[in-house]
Amino acid sequence: MITPLLSINWNPNPEIFNIFGVSVRYYGLLWALGFGLVYMIVHYLFRQKHIPEKTFEPLFFYCFFGILIGARLGHCLFYQPDYYLNHFWEMILPFKQLPQGGWKFTGYEGLASHGGTLGLIISLWLYSRKMKVNYVELLDMIAISTPVMACCIRLANLMNSEIIGIPTNVPWAFVFESVDMVPRHPAQLYEAIAYLLLFFVMFFIYKKFDKKLHRGFYFGLCLAAIFTFRVFVEFWKENQVGFEDGMTFNMGQWLSIPFVIIGFYFMFFYDRKKVSKK
Image (cartoon, rainbow, N blue to C red; front, top):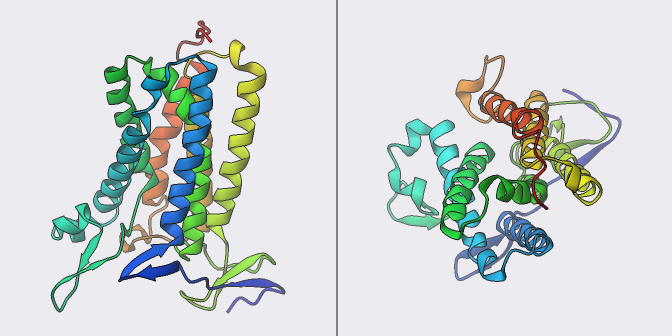
C-alpha cells in the first residue's frame, strides 16, 4: 500500500441539504454556478460586439439544454450503453428504478464532457440559424467562457469523490474515504486548475489581441487546450468503466483526439487570412 508523507483525507457529504426527499447537492450547485458565470461572461462579450439584448436572451436555454442532453446521452451511449439501452427512461429522467419497485430521484448520475461539447456545438448552430448570428463568431464567444464551466464541473466531481486518480505517493495526494483509503492523484483538481488558468489566458488574449486574430481562433484554442490536457490527465485517472481496462488509450482519450484536431484546424487554418469584423 502506498503511504505518502502527507495526504489530504477527503470525505465531504455531496448533499448540502434535503427537503421532502429532494436532495440539493454540491454537484447541481456547481453546475448552476458555472452556468451563471458563463452567462455573465458571454453577456459581456455580446455587449462588446453591440449585439442586441433580445438576440442574447434565448442563448442560455439553447446552451443549457444542449449541454445537458449531449452530456447525458454521451455518458449513457459512450460509457454504459449495455445498461442504459435496457433502462431507457433512466437515460432521460433524473430518476433511478429501484430493484424492489418504484423510483428514486437521483439527479443525472453520469454526464460526459465530450457529449456535452457536441451537444453545445449543435445547439449553438440551431441558435445561430434562428437568431441570425454568425455561427463561428458565436462559437468564439462561448469558447472564451467555456473553461469556467469546465472548472466548475470538475470541482463538482471532486465534491462527489468521483473520476478519481490512480494511487500515488505525492505529498498532495487525496484519500477519497468514500471509495477506499488509498492516496490518489486529485485528477479532478488538476483539471479544474488547468481550465481556470485557460480562461484567464483566453480572456487576456481577447482583451489584448482580439482585433489581430481571425474568426474561429478562440473556438480552436479552447478545444485544442482542453482536450489535449484531457488526453494527458487521463493517464493519472482510474478507468471509469470496466471495458477500458487493458486499453492503451481509454474512451475519454479516444473521444478527445477528434476535438484536438478540430481545435488546431480552427486555430491555424480556418479563415486565417481574414480578421473578423470586431
